[in-house]
Length: 293
Ligand SMILES: [Zn+2]
Image 1 (tube, rainbow, N blue to C red):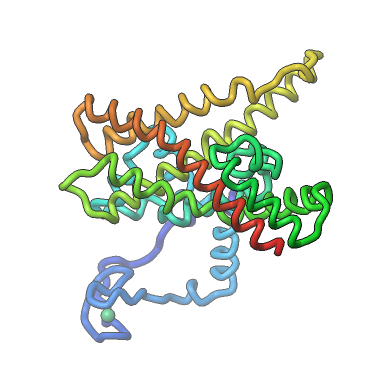
Image 2 (cartoon, protein in one colour):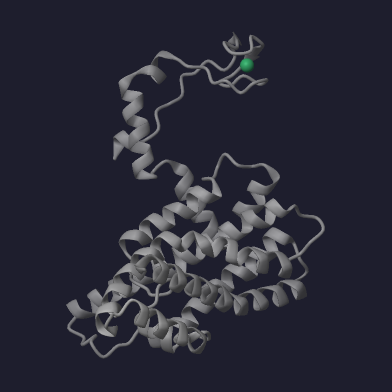
């Protein structure tokens, strides 16, 4: 792993330079008037090009790990720092979310963000509402239910990964209304929405599913019969506790509400996340049906 470590910086920060773009005088790596970067021989070398490429693929570059660690151990701190302008230690909130999305792309173990055609037509709040439309759709397409179901489930799984970003705009108005505070800008609420949705993706989705698979493997190696163990039965309370932890401490740290307000806001948000998931699944249904036309 040594080649992934950062090399000591030999840049001369005290030398006075003239900006090649705007001709103003400055010290340091960036022009303090137009932001132009000083380019040295190393920056133009092929080695630098490959170093950069490697960084883009490994995420070892401290920012990802730092964002992840801060989100996990001090929820709300990353958003608060980014909002006031302390941005260098962290990945950009959108990029951080997409790393989670990228990992989820390859290991979609949980069905939180996907649902089968059967579940869509029977287990959702809106199931009764969409059934007549669905019947009409099948008749028009003159398709057999069994054939269609198979096609639907494959297509829906693919869309579910691509549409994941939609949970951000769906969750945002709820967050904004429940945590409205005069002291903050709308963009601050958006930053916190990204941290919350990234957390939901990384912790109760990706991390938890890895943990469940790991425990199952260990139990199998030790000779326990895991076939009768149904994790889904325990999933909901565990997920609620994990998200509750993030909301409780995250809202306290980011919004600096009094404790009573933190309690009300986190309870309201936790409850309203069900609405977010339902809206997301409904959109997923509509888009999947549309794409199969
Ligand atoms: Zn300049």
